[in-house]
Length: 390
Image (cartoon, rainbow, N blue to C red; front, top):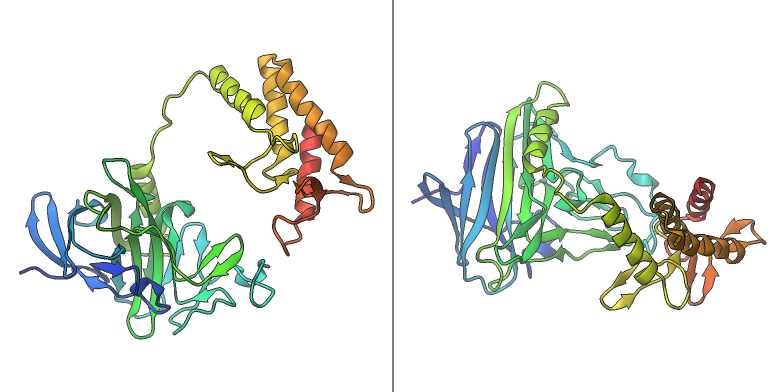
């Protein structure tokens, strides 16, 4: 027959299939088809869903750090979907949740100022524990899922009642053909269904997301489909152990990092690499209209404005000048130095005594690239720092 959960002390694991058209647009805790765990063998077990999707799951070990792999063996699901591995928590008290680099509950959530925010003033994302709705106006939600590659460690954990549990997942699910989809990590809390942590194949951010400091209430997905799902695989981990204090996450993070860490790959000799990058900047990285270094270039050409310092002209010019001195290449030095001289003549606003932030639409302008945040001081401070370094 088979069963639906794998149980441990303080938790159980279940696999869910959520169809993108319905479940992922809900503001409450998403609840998908729960898979049936069956057909155990020496390498793992299978999980089958009513919609017609079968997974093969490997999960090594019996306690502590357990590393596994999920692969989609077959798929007859007619609409886009994601696969969620949920860890249901059997907690008596409120857990302490953590996604590395995103601490819930004490993250100074009220300090942000966000462009296009309905209330004019925004906030950093914050967990609204067991609330019944998402408050987009305040960026409060009873659950959040983030792209796993946006976390300093692609994992999520909970500490409660003397237990520490965690899930981790690779940054992407990959196919042997080279095709891939994003994965995510998250927290869900519900007054009706309790608390859980989860990792997912085929998602970026939901139920709400921050894009260019604007809120969007629809899910952001790169879902699995009938066309790409079969053969897609993701590496994951499960961790469970005692929590003697609030630092119980440390052994897990160490073990998970050691597992996913890749040593630096061998590259070309340093001088060769420096010349390749410098040549590309000089030959292809200068906007043909403005004559300034430009950050945003793809196969379709240049995009957006040209920033002065932070992620812009001076931040490119400074290392290019340094590279020119290291390699004895006067051409690199002259190109970058001439551009810096132009900046000093053209980008300074004598009325304010400050630099403009961006060159856009054929002219220098103030603070158009990140509205409402008042980042002129940042751009000017960074510009002065880079100029002093040069």
